[in-house]
Amino acid sequence: MNLRQDAAARTRSALIDSGLRLAERVGLAGLSVNALVEELGVAKGTFFHHFGSRAGYLLALHREFHDRLETVIATAMAGHDPGYDRLLAGTTAYLDACLRDRGVKALLLEARAEPLVADEAALRNARSAAVGEPDFAALGWPHPHDAARLWVGLVAEAALLELQAGQRQPGVRETLTRYLRDRPANPG
Image (cartoon, rainbow, N blue to C red; front, side, top):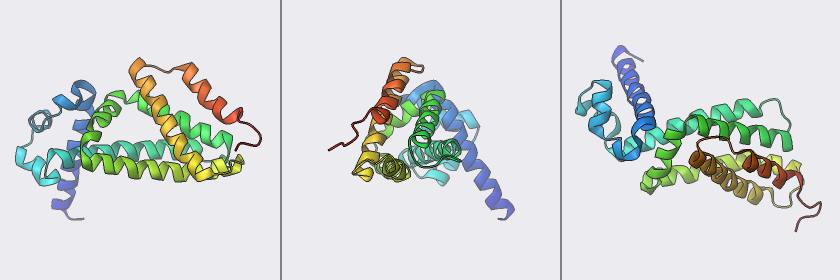
């Protein structure tokens, strides 16, 4: 990478980081191009050079947030064999990260009306289900792929409940564990 490319990558990264911080304070409605460039002290043209549009920027924010989430989840799941403990470690890591960055999570939920973001969310959900599928297989679920897909939706809903409350919801988290632990021996 040459100096020009390195400077461009740093500027793009700074715009993303600035947007993640700004999202915590102002939500989607306040996350305007003007607010972003003012926050970082760059020209509007710089923003459009890197993202093309506000929708492109929201997509980049979504990707960055979820890339960070995937790293946190993978770290939490590392060292666990597929099954109950691994699945719950990843689930807890996801919920804690969403709660820690609740302004960004809220912004991204609002941004799902944007088709680019909705498509990316569907891709991320499919990837998350693929990560959880071996856990459901190890737990003996008859349709591990479908179980993992439904689990992703259930955990996302749990994150919304915690987002609305602004804190961990122990009852919600306990219920998630019971869905796995207390399932019938022969579901079907």
